[in-house]
Length: 592
Image (cartoon, rainbow, N blue to C red; front, top):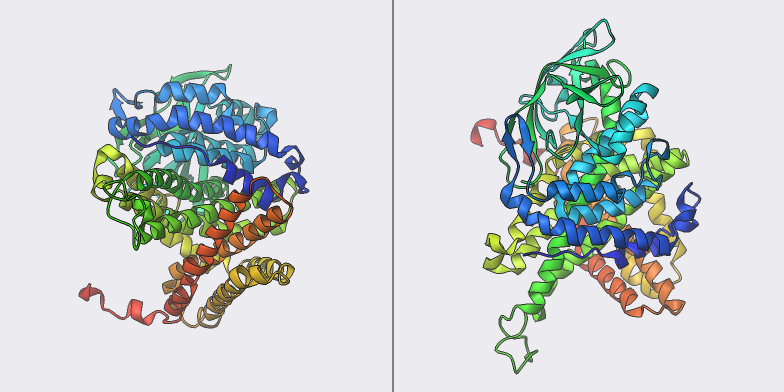
């Protein structure tokens, strides 16, 4: 049986030592004093460890079941959802006008980490609801907001997003779902959607589907797509759920992981829907959900790895195997614990240094979203747009790798379902696929984000690195252990970007073939920047005489490990990028 404890001390370090949120000029941040955020995180951590984590294995074993057109969720999920609602957790960072608590997005993300670590399959239900809330809040009419937002904020109703069709996954221009306009201003939606997470369940009074479909006159491709609100139950005049809409669950997917979440085939047979946003501009409205979802999936990637790491550390301390060299660690015991062995330490340090760097990057990204939305900061918007595919792609690839490493600590016992480690691996795998497979994230990064705004966001990122280095050049120890490695890695990133700039127009495949390596190169540099800034914060705390010196010394030791052992991967990624498209494309199709 696995366990989970929210890493509140480390979260607080990122929020206050690294980001210094209560001192930033972002509306709502002045209220986020350390005592307040600690209280919020402790309460969320208690819910996660005491309520959601014990249900993780239950959801995995029982899964969801389709009974007479209704999806039944695993035992205990409904009661847990009631506790979520009673605690006001779904409303944490929502608009107070519709019943929300109005906290910044950063706090919602931090709480979301604890929920995803404890029980990712469950956390997806309120998570997707938040995405639907955001889309309607941004693009809905006043009438739509009044009708749907209060119930979505409270999670009395839940939400979904319906993009994928059997023949149209990433290429949404191929979708066939039709929307036929009616005289009353509604549309009749007909088509089939697949892989719809939380598509139906028994934990809410209504499910509000946001569905991409093509209305007449929109033209071909994605330019003809519109977004529609399609409720499971049509609303009566008083706003309460009424008759069943013509939307049904055709099947539940049998999946590798996240068994506790209902992944549905949704059939729309002339279901009544209402346009959300502008006609034929559905992709713009949907990306309000998608961008938020991609940051959230990046969080899921490292959040599951955090839970797996905690269990691996406990096992490594307890499991006796072999002897330490050159001197036995526990001479009176039959063997020494796993954690004394260098290769086990290597694995655990790989995990720890990635996890803490990933948390810092995700929290920084969430802060940029707050700065963009709350302070109308365009530079912050452009920066987080650049970072989104990196956060989604690099953190989920790295999170899955770390989860597998945690399972490996258990040896053969990690492969046995009884230990629970295999569930972490199976659940983590989907994060690399959904909300845009990671290969697509890499293509988006190189094909769109790199040159966006004339390259200004990319140059701004390099300026973040330069300013961090310049501000700390006088610290000899920091310079050797953090600044010089970061400078070298940054030069590799600049060289890769220059390669694409010089070769991209003449040979587009050269850029496309190197896109995945570029995403990982960028990810390593981003984590190197985070570790450099965390090292600065830790050294500052130590110089000021903190009462928690062991924590800050551990932070510095972990950071030095990342800079020495992980950041040099940028050299390999750059070398692969420079080979261009020829090694990738030369083999004839028939020879595969």
